[in-house]
Image (cartoon, rainbow, N blue to C red):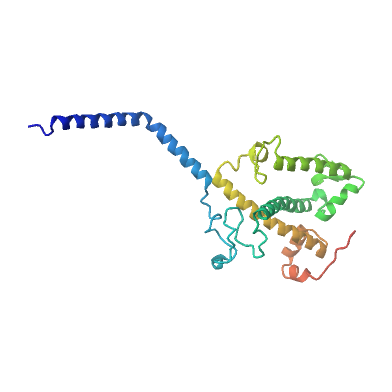
Length: 269
């Protein structure tokens, strides 16, 4: 006897036919569906970062004692957020946004400024001029040679230098904030693209997230360094490189504690 009745056999045939048809369609379009799943996964990866410097479990300013000391509005979304705002200066979102931009722009300038303060003083070609005296060379008879080389930049007019700085920096800042040749609708803090990231260092989202943290950390250190350069110039009358050489030669005799009360710098000295 047959294991199925004629009606049951027809049902089994229909089920088998449907299954085989579906399998054939899946075999043809499986590559397309797999590609779509991978695309969605890659997009999801770009939206998040596994970096330890972001999110609620990021390092905070009080270390293991930070529970309850971090304001609710500091969520770890942005680079350099250690949860410290004891004065509540960034409680308002618009104020927080303005402070973030101000800090980052100052940090970038401080990194450039710290490098510019140290390099000329280390070069014999500039006669080891300290940073607070370098600018005055433009008023000398021979003018100012950038890095001591007349083949680089030879400046004799302070008005020309000021005009170039205003035009160039004004154009760059205008494009950064309002768009222009670099493109429209760019992030004013991290515009990127061929103009602001020609090497493509921020193409990978995870790498970009790490670079943001490194930038703001080094920028904050540079701002403190620039403040130290100002104080050193007033107290010692010398530049940071000369101060470092003196400290290395006699660490116990020349340091911040021995020099803090000795103000030797006066204008023209």
